Image 1 (cartoon, rainbow, N blue to C red):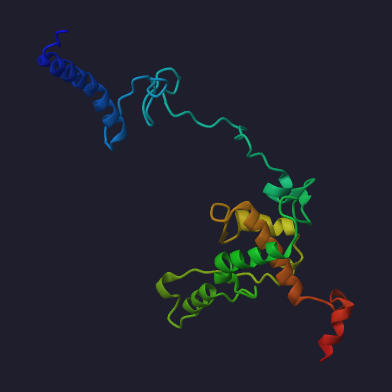
Image 2 (cartoon, rainbow, N blue to C red):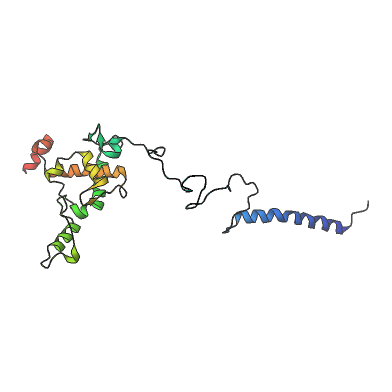
Amino acid sequence: MTMPPRILFFAVALLTLFALIPFAVIAWVRSAPSPGRPIHIIQDMDFQPRFNTQTINPIFQDERAMRPQLTGVVALGEVGTPHFTDGVVDGNWAETLPSQTPMSMSLLERGQVRYNIFCSACHGYSGYGDGIVNQRAMDAMSNADGPIYGTAWVQAKSVHDPTVRDQSMGQIYNTITHGIRNMAGYAAQIPTDDRWAIAAYVKALQKSQDARLQDVPPQERASLNK
């Protein structure tokens, strides 16, 4: 039996290698890091006709590609109860915490931490309005030659003031959220859960400075006389 010429084996092997080159190139392009787009053999829906942001879209009357949010539309999963989001129950300030943030020691500890971070600078750690920022501002205001650099400042409110102490939990939460008078709101800086934690801690702080003997458990009262 006559064997095929050796040149034929080399030719077949060479053609096979050449046939594999496109697949090797595609695999390399798809896997290697590159600032350009990868090769998409199957397009799927990766590249579709679209409008870029801040461009003109003649389909709409205002010709804006970026559509404004419709009034009253709320994203899925973002609907909250008035108690949780606004601190209101049946049109009145809530007297209690919402069900999403039940009272617990961990909640009060969380509220203390967040209060110390966001509130103590003006209101002080004890809540008497003697925070370091307030002290420095008041010193600048009381300068003998007039306010330094034209400083304008209003004394930080003590949370133990009767006008604040008598406020309900929901009203304190609302103040933290939206601010009041010269105090800015902290809705953008503090999540809703943490705002409720701070409100709970403020009520506990107020209670600590205005407690009665009847508020102390009977088994603990004897220790107060030592």
